[in-house]
Length: 503
Image 1 (tube, rainbow, N blue to C red):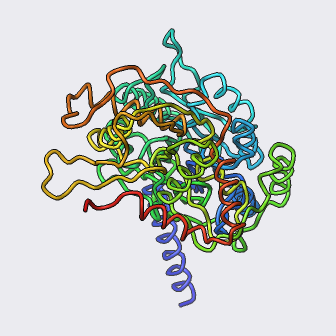
Image 2 (image 1 turned 180 degrees about the horizontal axis):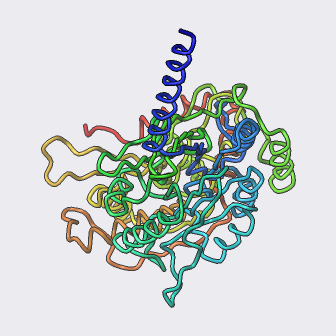
Image 3 (image 1 turned 180 degrees about the vertical axis):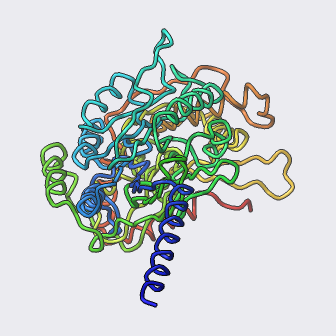
């Protein structure tokens, strides 16, 4: 009887052994990779005013995860530069790339705002990012050679990971969308033979990554950017099995994508994704990096931390455009001020104590250069209508009243109380002059859509000023606060008298 029991137990052991061996042969050996990812940081070095974000918190979080696990892989999908803090602007965004190196990013690519600095500065950014590999397969030299390393293979705790980098296609020295897709397809095929997992880190929106997946099915994961999408969960491309992730913007989130990979078939067995908010008090802060950022600020932009006033209510982007126009006008003594919120303003003005850096974040970067010009009243009125005809959002202004077209008016024309032939002294950010006023006039003329409006046919010129958006708005707010006027109420009063119904 005892012998019989022993034989039964031995038989069960053999069955389990062979069943386990068969299962392992069918599923293969698996391993894990935890991808931590960011995109569109845009020079948001400092902890943000709403208690979320800032690279010292990204650094604290990444380092805390790395202390717990050995399979962590950290990626950024571009647009590290522009739109953020004064200290970053003063350093031409170099300090932000230094911060990525301090955090220990493994790889990334460039974004269009990084590219705005020019190719030589991109190479400098690359040199400042420490061990981080900057990859890009669709920026090329005049002779057709690649400007940057297109891809690299990493050993992530025993898993071979191939990464290719893609910037949103550029007109100058860049492959067009079709050429970019084909280049990625070729690079992905090459990497697929060498790696267990293939990742494309792309400064490209998620919907375009879905299209790229059809052309480059060997890509397992797209870490995307450019569109500032907050994707709580990864998008699964059903046709290819690829996953697409994106983590908002401004260092407010770090994305997590945890993968289990079959090393024999090179297939993703399971995937789990989430966005982790960089909430102050919830995630750890890298105190050393925080002090480094603040010390750089004290050295390069000591005025940044000066508190200007206490704001009673959050001021939105359109309202900041109105405020900017009024401030530029007051600062220069011009007849009329303009500040196109759609083109110039990049952030809200937070509620609570507002320092100079917070004002800079709203429009200080895009309003750094300011120009003045003399325009006839009919040309100013034509500008408002040309924006509408060219499908641009209306600008914001100070110094005149405009009247909405009555229902049924054909064509719909915005009229003003300006004297048509009088010459007015105007002031606006140079970016608005170049990319809204001049461009909308050109579009109206080229498309022959200027019926009913008097678009100037002669060349318009503007001259630089020493005024900046940040200085003008800071001085303007200080004056209002000194008169004990609430800023939100003041802006509402300006807006009420700016664009009105016809009598």
